[in-house]
Length: 231
Length: 339
Image (cartoon, rainbow over all chains, first blue to last red; front, side, top):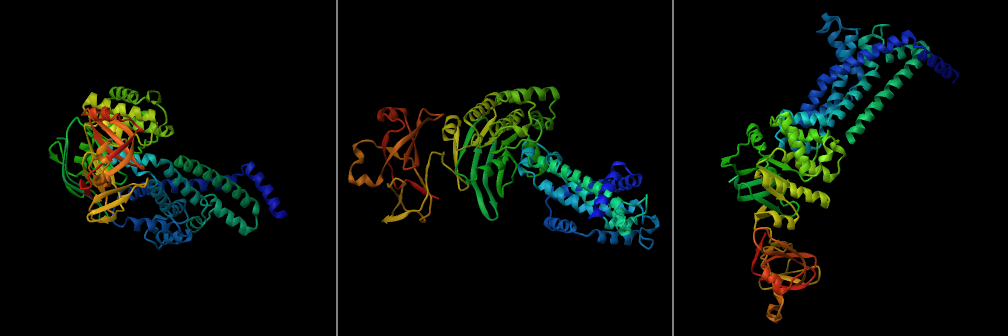
């Protein structure tokens, strides 16, 4: 118990003093998670909108597949991407393994289904009468789609926030594809795992506090946007 | 003719919800559409608004058959607009909602603003120009939705129960604004409503839709089963107040009867035993002036079942009819159609 209390007090001091190593680790985490969320958003939002807005054969099957992909473990994605970017993989010549780009690729693949599925849910929640209203006012398909998108905007932002929360706290992909290289690919979660292995809890607890703070911020924003959706 | 419809049907999962062999609607008229819930009113309005395509049949608009391709329909939708029963406004300001249809039609900025201010004034919402639309009440939403259509100066304005979910003041403003559109731009109005008095007051023609089929003028009396066999071809149904209505030959015990309007028969001619079976006692509940004739529509409650009959003014004066007065109705049990 003393160990935990001592670690916690030291960790608070570390956070307050903005320890350089901790700041570097947090910066790497925010950077890779930010890029992966951006790329996943660029793919997932249009894909989700298309699936939700259009009618096509096999639509339910596609949605079921996307929902299934939500449960894929991070280590499976790590293994899958590793097979492509390792030296023997088809993308081996690009030397991506153990770089931030590798983490970004893995994390993007991890959260594309999250962004897509939650975008579909956000669009599907929009009252069908919005489409009817736009049409009776003379809107074409593009204008009608824009109306639906605008009405679902808070739900879509909430989807992106949820996806960001997913990647900032994942450890499997960062460890397998990033390699936990200090000052380069060490993220908050991989650093915490390493510090735990070393039996040095202070930095791990400090990063845990930062991570929890970020998660709390994400959830706060998520609920804020969800609330606006409901209202 | 604006609309010419022939052999139109609409089915959902093998269930026919609309079956209209023929319907012609003229420009500049006001049409009323009456019928119980599920009669097919909304489906018919959606088809007339080019928002749904019929399963079969031909819909001609301005003498040209409608082609159900998106670019063609979009042009038609610029002339024919619908106000839903529970309209939605986009989650932005009232002004932006009003501007949406105008922008689509390429109206200039100055003209857009002028029309928006006028449109909102028409429905008594002039103080809400920049208000957030999602903070309006139901009645205010309905009025803004109507104004957003009126500013488009549509050829045809379709209204689905425009006054069903609003307070009396909002309903009055909606009614006045719709009629103003007719006066100012010769807009054809097609109004589905349960408000019989309003429809008979303003409409050139009221149509009755029941189980997806158009019949009569909306003044017919509809009586639901079950029917109990009495004798010969006569069947009867007990009304809530214990009286029985007797009619000739339903096709099945659960059939729905459409009875020709009965006659007021206050007097000695209904007292004989022979006519007892075709007499009902009720109370006058409402007298409404019909728009195109000097006739009065009288609603008589028998139990809680309303019967409607059309009477000349002289008859009203002669019988000294007023709401609350007890009357005797005489009807012909053979003047009945079955559904």
